[in-house]
Image 1 (cartoon, rainbow, N blue to C red):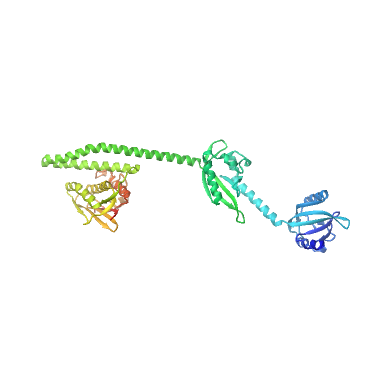
Image 2 (cartoon, helix red, strand yellow):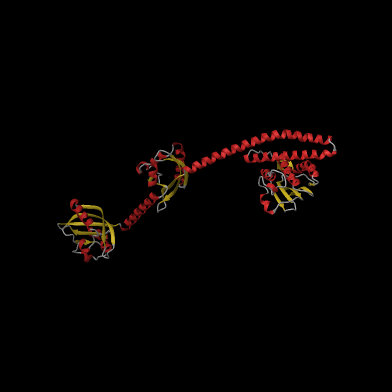
Amino acid sequence: MLHQIFHASPSPIAINRLSDGTFLDVNEEWSSFFGYNIEEVYGRSFSDLGIWARDEQQQEYMRRLRERFSVHEFEIDVRTSSGESKTVVCSSQIIEVEGEQCVLTVMNDITEHKRTRNALKESEERFRMMADSAPVLIWVADESGECIYFNKPWLEFTGRSLEEDEGKGWHQNVHPDDFDSCRSNYARALENRETFSTEYRLRRHDGEYRWVLDRGIPRYNADGSFAGFIGSVIDINEQKDTEQKMLEAKEHAEEMAKLKSTFLTNMTHEIRTPLTVILGFTSILRQGVRPEYHRFVNLIDRSGRRLLLMLDSMLDLAQLEAGTLEIEAHSESVTEIVESVALTVMPLARDRGLDLNLSLPSDRCYAIVDHGVLSRVLNNMLDNAIKFTEEGSIDLAVRREGSTIVITITDTGIGIDERFLAQAFDPFTQESSGLDRSHQGSGLGLTVSKRLLELMNGKIQVDSKKDAGSVFTISLPSTR
């Protein structure tokens, strides 16, 4: 029975005399593993066959065997008959065979296991070397979320040892105000096995808390099982300082814009009040002066109205930039608004010797607009048309195109050079400027009009040629 077990064993087994090491018996697995026929090994020893690859291992192995009468799980490097190096784990026991002390040795081949282990060790050493040379802080956590590794830059940053920061020790470095959010973000990522990114303040070795960006990604074992996280941390303190300064600058700018808007509103009110009185008395004055003085009265009226229009444009622009302009949009009759504005500016066109032709559809066209805002837009557009038209006519028309209300203002004026069209709606710009400037105005009319229309979901575009007039088209969504 024992003989059958000996030869049927899947592990290499040998029996040697203790006194001289000669083989008394080996099983088939031993013969196959080392590449020797059973007949070749009888009467020869491990040393005779050159099986021991390292003398110091052999000496240590035999020393333990003689002292303890047995050796368990001893790792030895051996050579086969072909010269191939292998690693085995040996377990030996001194036994008595026919009154003579012998050694029973059982071996297990761990060559591939050792290669894998060495490769893993080499990989880990390479990773640690790269991690310690990296310009960022690196950490590794196991499947439970406990940190098991921090690279050299991390330890230098915190001024603590690996033992101090392992597990949950690194929590002591996190700013108390940021700890809860930092922990909850990490716990959520751990539960869902997902990549995460979080910002918090980390205490540096000198006691200063620095803002850092911590990014972690899941890592997995060869069999696909979750192994934990690997993460990198970068110092973003300067970036956060810059963001804070930019936020403060933005808030300051917004506050200044609101103050400017308030100032302009007050100033506009202060100027509008006496200006309204002047324009009111101009109408009375026109009736009481001799005809030859009417042109002077008309000049006062035109100048006052232009000043009033410019004040409205400046106020609108300031409120638009400050974000304080409130639109009160309702369903309004666009045809009525257009007709009302046209009647207001007709005297100005007539004084310039221009015809203002109005074309309205038979039925009323409605859109969601702010009555006063749309009136100011049309006043701006018509004032521009009159100002830049020396002779001829201005056509103001309203029509419906499907679900859109279209307003067109067509003039026979000086037109716009093709090269300047792209800048037509920029603030404070006119095609002529400086000493060459031929027409008065703030250059705000088109800019403000475009932005006011956009607040009402409207659009404006221009089609123009130099010395051939211009066509401005306003589009508004129809409500009925």
